[in-house]
Image (cartoon, rainbow, N blue to C red; front, side):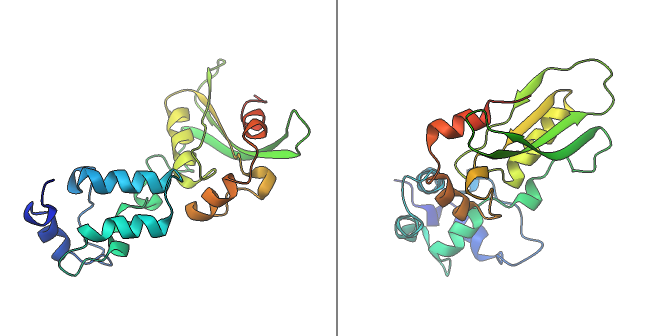
Length: 189
């Protein structure tokens, strides 16, 4: 195993403050693959946050804590936005539609290109295990900007919808019946 502290990554992390507005944006290549794998296990519900922090502790060097590493790895949706909600080339709106199996209303994010006069192909943007978070909304906007209609249903609609926090969204998704979830995703438009 490569010694992360000797690769220069540790030096980069030591000289930058996590709170610094000028901190360079780190990418996957700035972290050891094993640490990225641990975060992926956490993000997809294979391990708990506590387990991630325990596994990540061996990479916490030079004043860096496992929690600081966690904060560096988790998504920063403000930095990830590529197409704004107000982009003139798209029309984005939140809609609701009935679940085909009678599970109640499903909330979705519908985005269409504005400068197209013909019918366009549609794409269903399916979220991961966290709900309709800002990243998924941005993906739907990018799809519409490319000339497609995009629908991003919130699979957490039956349990109150995306709670504004990925950790809570992950917990809520575990409460949703997978068959019901698929019915809600693919029923309309």
